[in-house]
Image (cartoon, rainbow, N blue to C red; front, side, top):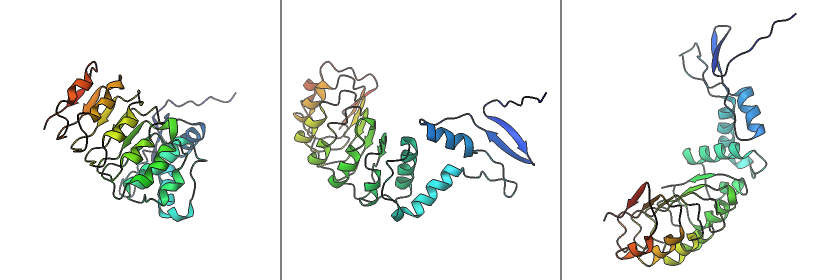
Amino acid sequence: MGGVCSRKRDQQVDEDGVQIQVSGRYGKSGSSKWLRTSFSRPVIDCQLGRESCPSLMELCIQKICEDINRYTKFSMLPRDISQQIFDKFVDSHCLTSASLEAFRDCAIQDVNLGEYPEVNDSWMDIISSQGLSLLSVDLSGSSVTDDGLSLLKDCSNIQALSFNYCDQISEPGLKNISGLSNLTSLSFKKSNTVTAEGMRAFSSLVNLAKLDLERCSQIHGGLIHLKGLLFSNYLGLAK
């Protein structure tokens, strides 16, 4: 009878003198699981230079970034793969208003574009197209206005929102986030157009654990609108 060979998760195997880590990590989707378990080899001890080799997934994403103009749509990919491609575009500063269109309806969860150049209202249609999948958005330092912020009002599963250093967000825009009841973290640090009256929109955010309004110069008297909110993690109001 043939023997049965089994390997534990995260066990190192020696194949022809090359150590390979067998990983048991899985992605969120079936397709991603297949890719990661079949091709991803995060710890390969290369004999030349003893450097860690990139996984097949990393190589594919890098190639997509290099040939960015060839792709017009990523929505057919599993969500976690689209997320990795999006993050790579951001990290490598490949993302533009034109290339952003390829990420429409990709069910991306995290949009971290804090301090990213040229982000404005024209980007918000694509960002909001992620719909109920969208969990966190950082648009700090952007030129997004009240009109752009209003497009997020139907992304009701958002848990974290950051618009630090954004001076084009005011009371009309803040009213649009009053229905985002799943918000646990909200930051408008050094946003001088946030006013005491605008803070009224925060009163319905019952799950808010962190609110950062540091160096917002127009919020004097707005604390009355926060009555009843617990802020278990942080409340920043320093001038």
